[in-house]
Image (tube, rainbow, N blue to C red):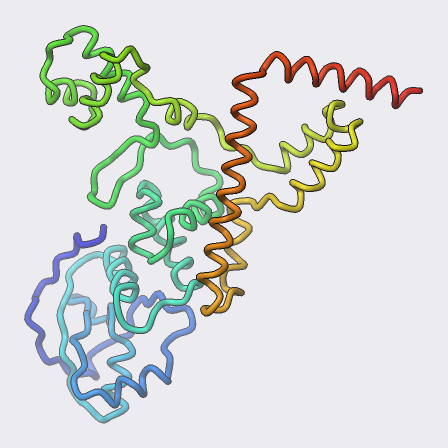
Length: 324
């Protein structure tokens, strides 16, 4: 995890450049000669990171090439001791934090490897390590690990295991409180396997006569839906199929829905000077979709019977019209 690496020596030492070997770099296209030239013109180069056992370069290939270009025989080194997976993680995190930025393709490739080697890591933990957003990592996870079974928990950035769905813990906390209303919060948290803050919130909700699990979380356990399957079912519904506005709605949404992984391959097409504007546009579209979701949910809550009745009548009338 980020910040969990311990360097063997924090004081740099001079090492012969000829003794160093290329490492497992996250840069798919190798080093940039232009960047090497810029570094070669610098007076002092920061220390590079090297794996103690193999003398392979973890972070600093550009600096090594720059030192060779200007004729240096030694370079300042800080050593790291760890296995291959830890070494690669340190290489990715080091390149994300400083120096020539990793390309989007580099970061996504690194995320794929991290997910393969650490499937229990949370999306946010992988995102921090690879320099991506959690949303992007989630999409990559779906592509990389499609055959993975349902998960009950993930490891966060701090190394702690947390459940993906916290509703079960809240239910347990509610049961503990019901059996012993006067129990201290720490005892409730320990017994239910939740945080003290969660135990406090559950107790407050129970005292107010509310469900221990907030409504948004109760709905979070629902399976996510994908548009292709919804479109097929929606298009076959007579209330949609035989209604002009129903067919128009399907055509409209067909051109506006974006599957979670679709945009990943298009991000690179946005020039840097347009990224801010496109990001704001994406937020605006997201806000519009959220408003649509709220309106539909509100109607489903307030007029469930009417909605069903209208659908049946519309379907029957449409079928009669279609058969006439």
